[in-house]
Image (tube, rainbow, N blue to C red; front, top):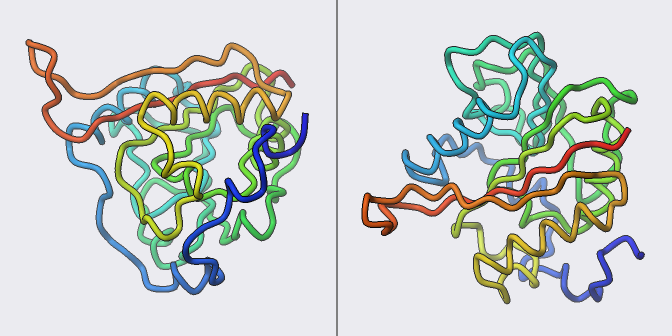
Amino acid sequence: MDRQAELPAAAFSRTDETPDEQFYRQPRFVTHIDEGAIAAVTGLYREYFPAGGRILDLMSSWISHLPPEVEYGEVAGLGLNRAELERNPRLTSLEVQNLNATPQLPFTDHSYDAAGVTVSIDYLTDPVAVLRDLGRVLVPGGPVVISFSNRCFPTKAVAVWHTLDDAGHLQLVQHYLEAAGNWTDIVALDRSPRSARGSLTGDPLYAVVGRAKG
């Protein structure tokens, strides 16, 4: 299976192909999903991330949405804007790296117990390569929680993301992990906040979770 999950190269083109460092050079101290969706992300992390574990926040920003009552042994953040990462109170270390330019992660094998990718998978132009290397970095059985909503920076999201609905996004991200080849127990989840009658109460929140084969 090829590196881009059998999708044509055009599927990963973007309206704005200027260097990502230029687009993200100004810090954005805002949240990109509403409080209900943030709570859903936090709930996922509470469910999947081991207390006391070594956590990797991939494509990180100034907030990691980790459960406030849980202590972790380490929280490493990798993102594009140093000012945002330095503002993040949960990070114990940080790395500034453009994964679209360099998809290989600067970490040793099996150095983290779990990883999160929050509302940013749609910006990766080689998601399979990034997720394959992430599988190397996690311990065997370590989970990755890839969450997303229906919001994005449209000029930086890859073309295929724009062609799909929410169900299609779930299938696409599942396909990324399958194509990477080193993930198992892959599940798609709808954790959108809903009323008692089942209607959305705010931003939707979806996630794909997989576990590293090791």
